[in-house]
Length: 204
Image (cartoon, rainbow, N blue to C red):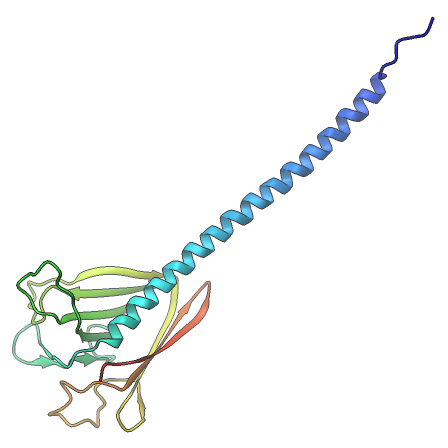
């Protein structure tokens, strides 16, 4: 009589071993794909954050308004654009075009400041609800972008010369409070994307 056909124990063990090896390889490949997708999503989200921050900065700089602001003690005025190592913030501007769809009793000019907190690698934006603030008017603080390792700015005057401070020391004192640069070159160094620069033409 013929014996019933079948697999031997050794053949079954070999087959199970092959299936297990193939399964491990497939699982490892699947994990790699999932990791790559997660990394791609994180990088895309990070890039959107960087783009949003740059867009906010560019929009602010493009709408500089010549309106000076009263100092907090009320005894003097600050220029419409102030960039000085001796100032409270790295950059402070009067920004026009502040939309008012709700019709609040306020003007259309907003006082905005930027500062780079190098201890935390943060680019921070400040703004005040009123133009002529006092010490009782704290700024509204927004952490605009993290991972910032350096920020550089320079300002182009009407004669085509670049300055690191504004108003320039050589400017007419009578015009220093309202004068605006023709363009602003800003460069932000981000740890995961490198140096990002924009040349912004102001509304001068």
